[in-house]
Length: 493
Image (cartoon, rainbow, N blue to C red; front, side, top):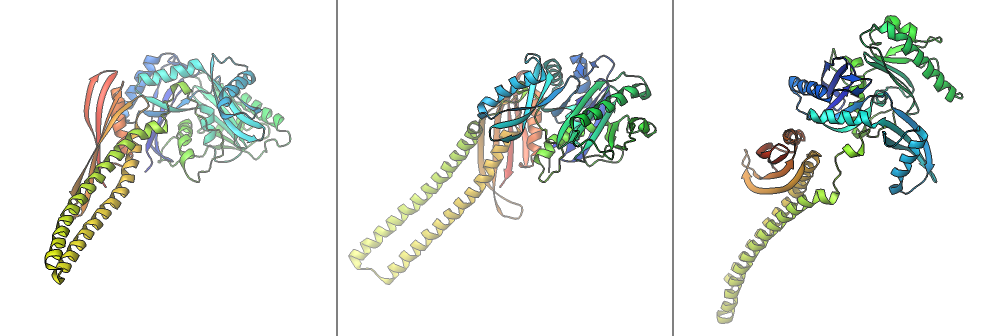
């Protein structure tokens, strides 16, 4: 079963939260924001917004603290660049410098994100984008104050584009605080416009601005694609406040009277779910789904992580991740092998003693048929013991793979801000309800973290993995910002 994940978007008017599992919407919630807390996509009061987030999480009983966050498209810049083919280790610096020049921005003021679109011998085509450092830094700081851990981020218009159900689309999302326009073609956002709107005024007053920007976007696209302009049959897909105002669709259809429709839902939703209000959140949720879902149909190629490198959990080397599990598994293997060796040694010693007695008999009294029969019985007994040991060893090899998979999951679920100190593995034989022999093991994980909520989230993620029969937080010691804790997981294999 897919894990539950949370997508979060904050604009000038409200906070929107969506809980989903795969393509299924599970729950949703929002809370309005007082004017001035957020302005033109920039959080102005971190403490107040963090308090609203904390209250929302508590009132809704949301246990997941790891979120996919949306970033306002206001002041967002993007471009497609082409650079010479370079060694992989040289690409980041070369792309960053070229993006700075193409977008005419200072690297001290923006974060650059990028994604390779295509490459041919000698040339690489790359989509680059820039987001203001100030707005991103404040967003991450606010979420952390609320005890939330953002591990993935995307820009709002790109999240909207990801929900497209057709390869060619004109998408207009109008919310109380602003609107976004995206023209999608060939899997790329060909035109992106994000602008704020005057709040607490009727939609009709903001309509001229929306229509003007929409006409300008279509004209810009057509002028850049004169060989293949937008066909009149391509509809304008609307969401947000426009979705419920069919009475004004005629005004936005333009001089060509282009058809207008509500954006279809790209996810499975419950009856009464306000699709148009949460279109951004669904695009954020699909960011992970489309990347992992086999055979998923996506009409959008752009899928970089807009969260700056400085805020991402530091990737641990595979050797570091596997070191503890490998040692634990190795020690278990050595212990079992030693047990087998001791058992075989004891039986061999007994057999040598019996064989010595037989040899003495053969010398003193000559061998008899009864001696041969007795010796054959001893050989048969030892062979049966050997077969039992081989069967146990085969079972251990199968169980070893299961245990290694569980150890890997324990590492994968570890929050980025937590440090794993050690793992202790204990194994015991037990009997199942039907009298069958079972092997039960307990794995104790000792880790350190600066946030008590990360401890609870780690336990929740381990339970959500479905790999363990029981997950218990057995100990929490230390003071705030210096917690030492143990989690014990157990299962029968």
